Each structure stands twice: as structure tokens, then as C-alpha cells.
Image (tube, rainbow, N blue to C red; front, side, top):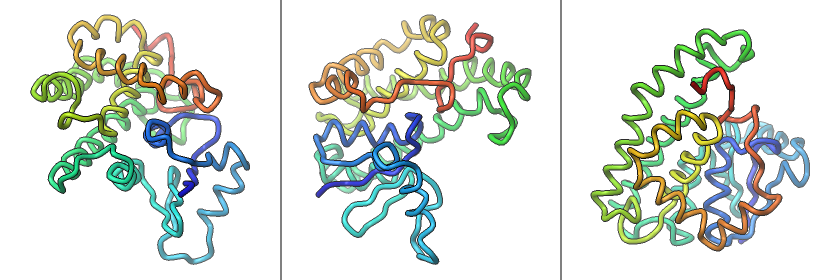
Length: 235
């Protein structure tokens, strides 16, 4: 099967978690908006009165199925490409963890847009500074500390079971994104999450991921996506 991934063509965003899974799996896929423009994506979202049309990207077309929401897409792809546990309990556990990642991603976004996505960053800079301070004082230790503990409890190599799953790929992206957005803060924080840093480095060295990161398919981080670098927030 050749998948069709629909997401914004100029940012990593939430679609990057899906791209990483597809790349690690060596799956055949087309990044439709990058290859054919956003009109192709919008056409899929506006299919008349289709009862199951997606609300927003990312969404994946797999044969006749259209699956939306990052965690839901990964829940679909995981068992089909050896990136999820074999048991139902294990698959639900990894899905649960991915939903926790989704919560964290929203909090990352809210560091630079605490008053909402319709306002420019420049219109909410004071609130962003306050939100970012709270994020690093309280939320980052809570989230990353949780995953660090899970990694240690599972033996230190992967988060769930003895094999790589899509949650490990997602945590790679979290570390990479926080390093881009908050390099100074992450440099101070990383000694306390050595397990997650090791996981990040192992993922980056996997052949398919290493090739992807070096390719033009990997969109660079920028100030339009979730992870944005603003010097005044990285103290």
C-alpha cells in the first residue's frame, strides 16, 4: 500500500510524528501537500457532505480509509508496521502515551500562543513569557520526568516492551523540538533526563531515521510550527 499523508507543506508540526513512523517503517507514502500543493489537501477536507471527512490535518489516506488525528493515525500504523506491541493491552498503553504526548505538544504551542492561535505572537509576548516560565518550572519536569521514569522502569532502552514503538519516535521529536525552541533551557535540563537523551540519540542513529534527517523530506524547524525559537523566552 502507498499511503497519502496530508499536512501543511512548510512545517513539521503534528504531522512530523506521523512522518517519523512512516520513515522508520520504510513505508511508501506521498506527502501530498508538499508534492501537489495545499489545494490537494483542502479538496480532501471539503468532500461535499462526506460523513467521515477529517476536521483538520494531519490525516492519512490508506486505501479507502481516511484516518485523522496524530495519535489515531499512529494507532492505525503501529501494528501494521511493527511499531506497536502485539497485545491489545500493549497497543492501548502506547496509544495512551501518545495521547499524553499530544497534551505536551499543546502545552509547547501555548508557550508562544498562550492567548490563542488567532493572535500574533507579538500581540501576546508578555503572556508568553509568563506561560513559558511556568512551562519550564512545572510542566516540563512533570512530563519529561514521567517518561524518564517509564524508560528506566522498562530497562532504559525503549519506553514500552523490548522493541521500538512509535512512542519512542515521538519522544525523539519532543527532545529535538525542545532543543530547537529552548536551547539554553534544555542544556540546563538535560542532565536530569539522561535516559531520554540516550533514547533520542539511538533513534537519530537508526538507518532509516538517519537517512530521513539528512534528506530534503525533513522540513527544518521554523517559527511557523509548534516548536518556535524566540530568544526572549529562552532564558
